[in-house]
Image (cartoon, rainbow, N blue to C red):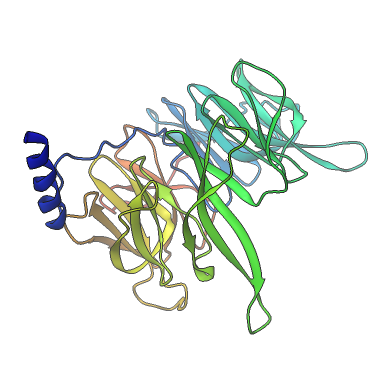
Length: 350
């Protein structure tokens, strides 16, 4: 009887915008929340933050508030494999304290090779396996190979386990038992232009027979992409408005009535933060509006600021009252922005 009453009360509260028990938000590592346009370019290590700029790896000291190259050798050009972090390509990851990223090398024939590199004793050691991308999930190391395959090296060691051949699934973030990512497909529209359709999908970890399960399909104009706070998925609908659903795609609701740049999206314990963008009209005067919104959707979006140069990336660091951001005119050039939308500033170099 008590259980039935709670279920009835839960249904009533759901219809009025509340819930019978607040959904638990999984504490994802902040580097996993950074699903940027060009790959994982940001990694929170605790006392410092690692940032990618071009092929350089930078290090931000939270206590000092200063930025410098990860390599402290002033005579180094930071563009060789001899450098402790040279030839950096991003895909930064902090998985249970192990810092990793992708690095490239060019062999004697001029061929480019991409490798997983792990931080050990102050330098990123090059791996031996050629890859396109990687992600740790379920304790395993998942990789995309140059042949388009997706598989994993099991936790504790072992031979490579092939899961998918020539797949268009791009693994992005681990949530629970699954890896979430987009599956891309392309077609030619009536004007002869090649367009992409992106299906947000999930793949069960540790299962060699797993196949991507479709969750949501993105319209071609939005370019795919999504975010998650560990309890919900956030993405654009066909018009580009902000949508939210459960992790299995159910209970889909529209969060905004205006267009949101899903890559310029972040969250903390209380709010969602995002930037407004009109994909069809670059001169829309509302492009560059910066909002925050209660995570439970109990109040409409609150306009915090307007930027003539719109924010296009937001990366929150743990235990900080500011975001790392970059803007449309200076992509890849990291700046700081207070969470209330004020004090956009450059980061001082050592």
